[in-house]
Length: 115
Length: 109
Image 1 (cartoon, rainbow over the protein chains, first blue to last red):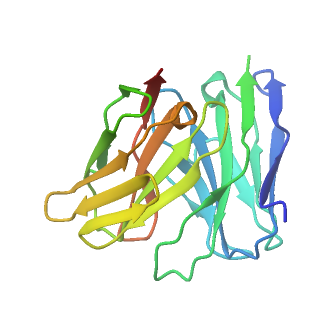
Image 2 (spheres, rainbow over the protein chains, first blue to last red):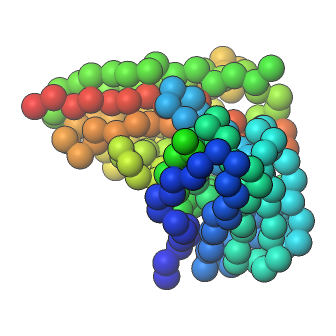
């Protein structure tokens, strides 16, 4: 039982390049999330998905896109990377029915640097 | 707006007790979570409170007062491995988590 896995663990991009961060969970969770974590700030929600095939914007969605084609996978895309997107990105999942609060399980994170 | 406040950093001595406070103002309330995050690692779940009062789990306890918008995490018999950041998060009216910036706890021998 791997839990939540993320690839890659580290990435360096040049301004304007694109890439996709991958996230997979094997807990059969309905909900998945993408956060970014910057020094001195709380985790900020980029996008979330309440179920397979649905996605919604979070607090800081600009410059990102997501897809949830399969229940176990949630992809985060950067179309044209900017230095302001240098951050640590965490994927999380939770069992969620939409009517209760459940703990979120986090992946190990992707450390992205944009130069 | 929505706001979660925690002290930025705290220092405590091995074997002692420390209390980490969290105050919140959010649009709706559906519970409060505490997570632990070691440097360079992912957050891991510690506790969840939705009703007023104290929840005890081994060396860790968490308290909630909904009327005051206040919670604390109490760590007893501190060990060096407790050196980490402690994150407070509130589940809002849409069941989305609003996160505090975290409290870095430094344990000294």
